Structures are given as C-alpha cells and as structure tokens.
Length: 173
Image (cartoon, rainbow, N blue to C red):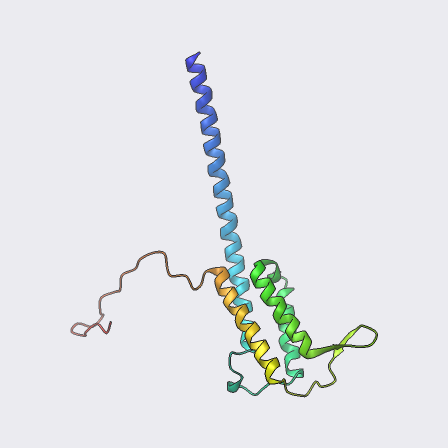
C-alpha cells in the first residue's frame, strides 16, 4: 500500500513539475519571438522618426505639404506587410497615435460635410507651437520605443576591457 501511494505521489509530482517547466519554456519562447519581432519593428519606426528631428535648425522648417510624405511613411510602416503596428506596446501605441493625430491636425481640416481634406494653407510653414508639439511627440515616441526593447538598460553580463594592442602604449582609460 505504501509503495502504491509513493508511486502515485511521485507520478503526480513529476507531472506537476514537468507541466510547470513546459509552460515556462513555452512562455519564454513566446517572449523571445515577440521581442525579436518587436525589435525589428521598433528599429524601423525609430528610423522613420528622423523625419521629425529634435532641432529644426539643421534643416529648413517644413511646410504643411512637406509633412504629407512623413505622415504616409508612418501609416505605411503601421500597416506594412510585416504588420509592424501589431507589435507596439500600449505605451508605444499611445505615443504613436498621438504623433499621428498631431500630424493630422496640422495637415487636414474637416469640410462642412464631415470629410477630411488637406488644409488650404498647404504651402505655409508650421507655427513654432506646431513644430514644438511634433518634436515633443516624436521624442516621446523614440523614448518609449527604447524603453520597450530595453535599449537603455545596462548590460546584464560583466565584460572585461581588452589589453592595449600596441605595447608600451598607455591605456587611455
């Protein structure tokens, strides 16, 4: 009787331990796959945000019509064949949509029949407030993308600095 009870207890313990391990392995694999897909999608979106630089002083201030291709590139990224928009975290999606909404507000107006149309002032430069708002929102999106992939975290493994290559050269650090 004791042997049967011990065998049954051992079987239950083995089942619970294996099931738990298998579940952890599946979750880990899912997380790794999602991380890899998110990394590629976030890199592409981060690259697109270069169109709204931190300082407009380095390039001419854009007109409203200059931002139409910028808006199109963001939309094309979101709905790309690789479905980039699916991989945004909640924080990144909020930041992305806020930037899209800001672009829409400087580019489009509602017509009396409720349809959106390109603003009549398409060749006018953006105001300082509009530029500041777009820059702030693009910066927030970039920061959120970096946070999502952990790009600003310190490495978790220690490394050793290599010895100087040339003999007799002092180590500058």
